[in-house]
Length: 192
Image (cartoon, rainbow, N blue to C red; front, side, top):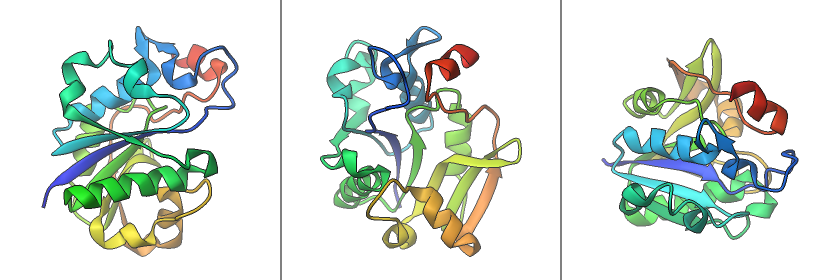
């Protein structure tokens, strides 16, 4: 069965103080989210979905992703204000419609997760596989079709809730890289 990649990038980034959205902030010469998208693209999934909401990323990132634009399926999460679960469900709906059997989901505000992590998680076997960075479980996470119905449908919960409530379904893959989020200007300065 085919496998999709998903970059969740729909939230408001409300903890980031500044005139621009955190995903569009410059991080090592590119917007934060471009690093995540390019890392996921490099993993070789059958299709890559970028879930947006608060910002029209397709328009904002056109110049940064021009060469890759035909490899990205942009999905708007209409209920992004209601929490991450709604953005994740928007991804699941698009993936189901396109007939993929599993997907690997990561976050747009994790620019230091390398392609190798996306690829390792994607190549894993098991119902739910999570990346492990220095002993800590963080996205990206692979979800087989059999567990999609267990994902939260409301609130600010994502795959973490499934991992917490069904540990018997979860395996971990050690990965290189850094899974730090860029949530604040302080985070941006620390990791730049």
